[in-house]
Length: 600
Ligand SMILES: Cc1cc2nc3c(=O)[nH]c(=O)nc-3n(C[C@H](O)[C@H](O)[C@H](O)COP(=O)(O)OP(=O)(O)OC[C@H]3O[C@@H](n4cnc5c(N)ncnc54)[C@H](O)[C@@H]3O)c2cc1C
Ligand SMILES: *[C@@H]1O[C@H](CO)[C@@H](O)[C@H](O)[C@H]1NC(C)=O
Ligand SMILES: *[C@@H]1O[C@H](CO)[C@@H](O)[C@H](O)[C@H]1NC(C)=O
Ligand SMILES: *[C@@H]1O[C@H](CO)[C@@H](O)[C@H](O)[C@H]1NC(C)=O
Ligand SMILES: *[C@@H]1O[C@H](CO)[C@@H](O)[C@H](O)[C@H]1NC(C)=O
Ligand SMILES: *[C@@H]1O[C@H](CO)[C@@H](O)[C@H](O)[C@H]1NC(C)=O
Ligand SMILES: *[C@@H]1O[C@H](CO)[C@@H](O)[C@H](O)[C@H]1NC(C)=O
Ligand SMILES: *[C@@H]1O[C@H](CO)[C@@H](O)[C@H](O)[C@H]1NC(C)=O
Ligand SMILES: *[C@@H]1O[C@H](CO)[C@@H](O)[C@H](O)[C@H]1NC(C)=O
Ligand SMILES: *[C@@H]1O[C@H](CO)[C@@H](O)[C@H](O)[C@H]1NC(C)=O
Ligand SMILES: *[C@@H]1O[C@H](CO)[C@@H](O)[C@H](O)[C@H]1NC(C)=O
Ligand SMILES: *[C@@H]1O[C@H](CO)[C@@H](O)[C@H](O)[C@H]1NC(C)=O
Ligand SMILES: CC(=O)N[C@H]1CO[C@H](CO)[C@@H](O)[C@@H]1O
Image (cartoon, rainbow, N blue to C red; front, side, top):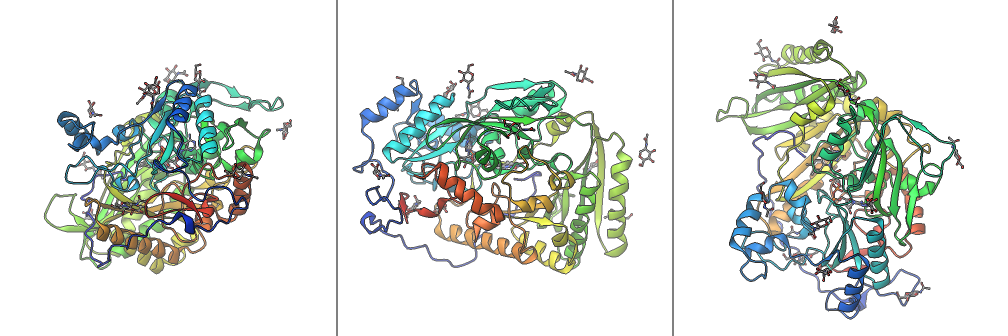
């Protein structure tokens, strides 16, 4: 995610990695760890013996009221060999490929090309097998459509995935040979203006406004709707990010340091369980699942159909944009950057949050000259205030210290008053373009990591921003630390309760189907992750925005919640009907080189 359009240094591979040798697929060699020796060792694949017959698919289609789709890959319109080929449609698709709305409104498309394995880009010079995409999709609008899809996948040994907006950075919303439940059109909403009583908890009334929303509701819908009653959800910064993946992963927000994580605001959920039951989860019913579905991750414990979130009165906001930069050859650039970032815990404790980004040797976007600079740029907010001086008096000393300590530092800040959060969001949402190869790495940083050893922080930031930029988002703070989720707790990584900064580094590249680029990108992702692990070995990472290749991912994403999450997963999904990686309980299966999913 990127807030500002910097001159992003597109990744140019340097390592001399050789293409990984392709492994032959030998289903008969699979060793089964499962106790049921008659269960198939792999999920069914089209054309294989176990794939459901056309009649079975037609019966599913009837059950889901004719909402079964067999979509062509969106890029097929550019390939003359494909049935959907069309010159005009190709032009439109190419024009829209960087547009988040395009991917989120398509039944199978996802934002980052790699997760469909570049198997049908809108580019005639690339291959188009479509094998990275699911085969069938249910365009679900009711829990019953979801239920029928889950039961069908279970009964027929078909790989099952869930797609919502397709934003996912770890590739969980696309998969080959799968049936996909597309929840994008689950958009029912109910506003509760004054209070909410969780279903079947006759003794509980939760004061304050709340929103019940279908899992397909996207950020811009949620903000716009709650704005009509002068409230806001604790939401993310993208426009099309949907509640399904966001809430189940934890959901960070620029409003979180003052109000808690998005998932901390959840009062109730409705899900379809992996065994096909429609369940209401809250503090009185299905409490284990209620705990797990708030932070345990998407497409693992069930399919979310709707969620009820507590709202906050929309705060007035003082917003600031700022930058501090210096010539790329200034050897003290990272001394300055480490100092500035070390101030973030104090800023968050003072009620300030925001989206700063470190930039490292990028073309001078400040004056447009042909020079290179290093520095930091971003947006800060002080919600609940109309007095810009309160924000400025916190930031000015930082600028003064920088100027007094290091030579040749240039900077600027401006403030703007917004009467409510919606007014701030309308100008400052995340417009990140999509439609390229993108791998990510991330780390959550607590006060010790940010303040106790500035040499270590300096080194880590320098490595972490090596691809041109890295985020150092202030999206956790006091209210996350002392959050009281309903039912006592939820499953987010406990490190959130002492985090101040969510740092991310991405490798974006524009050369598809290139094994060298892929290998280099994976290597760099690992380099970023290890730089941050060295700085903060006892923290972890936000699972929704992280490296797919994170080592020790169980602990990195869930910490000491992992054993309880695993036991709930085994209990509610003994057959691993919902499977993704890196996801809780995924250890018993692995994707083969040809994309099929087999037991290990
Ligand atoms: C531009 C951009 C901005 C972002 N901003 C933020 C931000 O401010 N804060 C933040 O926390 N994150 C942010 N994210 C990350 C975002 O939270 C994740 O990408 C999240 O996975 C998106 O969920 P989705 O449902 O929209 O996407 P999808 O890719 O469709 O789904 C993501 C995962 O959730 C699962 N899932 C989706 N819906 C359901 C459901 N109904 N039931 C069960 N599982 C489901 C999918 O199977 C998949 O595993 C941002 C991402 C992008 C690309
Ligand atoms: C074992 O797997 C087979 C095939 O999936 C299934 O029919 C059978 O019911 C399973 N047996 C048990 C005991 O789970
Ligand atoms: C499902 O049924 C609808 C309505 O009859 C039909 O239009 C659609 O093509 C069917 N889907 C598939 C994949 O056959
Ligand atoms: C592409 O985007 C334009 C406007 O953004 C829209 O009108 C058009 O329908 C889109 N095309 C496709 C194929 O989605
Ligand atoms: C999916 O369902 C929605 C809601 O009924 C409908 O508007 C949309 O056209 C459908 N999409 C496809 C591709 O069938
Ligand atoms: C949305 O509302 C419609 C009509 O009231 C209903 O049929 C459907 O089940 C609801 N969907 C969800 C996800 O609750
Ligand atoms: C929201 O705030 C505006 C401006 O203060 C006010 O006019 C309006 O009545 C409020 N709406 C509600 C539903 O409270
Ligand atoms: C409400 O009652 C349920 C049992 O019906 C119990 O589990 C829950 O803890 C109670 N909650 C409160 C706030 O008293
Ligand atoms: C501050 O405002 C001036 C004048 O509008 C503008 O040129 C400058 O880019 C702004 N700086 C920042 C950091 O937003
Ligand atoms: C704004 O805040 C500053 C610093 O806290 C304070 O001195 C000043 O009186 C405030 N101004 C108003 C109008 O409240
Ligand atoms: C330091 O002071 C100079 C001269 O007043 C100014 O141009 C520059 O922007 C300042 N730098 C910072 C980081 O405030
Ligand atoms: C991805 O595509 C490559 C060819 O570009 C193929 O060798 C590989 O098996 C595919 N992987 C998956 C998981 O589909
Ligand atoms: C073309 C490409 O880069 N494909 C890769 C995308 O990511 C998956 C999952 O890591 C790899 O298996 C593919 O090789």
